[in-house]
Length: 211
Figure: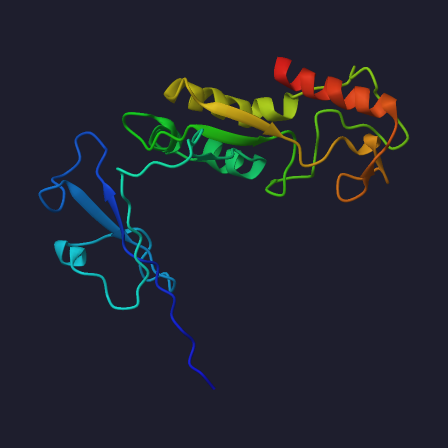
């Protein structure tokens, strides 16, 4: 029986970008943190000794800032229903949002793939912005509402925008409203191939942008 291999993430060196940071390691102002697969180290700051030559066989990432390839729109994440729940309740919310989105005092996240309704990361039941009882329809989007997101998600998005006015947000639906699908479920199923439903889904997107 072969022994299990311990997978250890390579030490990641990051240039200190935080104003007022403590004197960094080395003359180039570099600080080092490490995370290992056995969780004995979880973003643990390292000493100067960790800046030595890499161990044999350990993967090495070389960054050459003089080489340029494709342009990148931005780097980011997503404020899902579950992450919004945790952030909104945290006593460190303001500090976390600053560290994530501020372009001077944080890492300056600049792109969000934002769920239109529930995604697979949701605290409560799955939802969309136009949920109806089975058998009901709303082709004119008269029942459309982002009220669910006004509690936690949208305030966090506005806070992120205050930190980074150039933040880009891409709305992404995990599912259309259940009444637009067969069977009428947010999990699985197929979109109903009918012009009335396509028109309604178009209005759904427009309503979200307006909201």
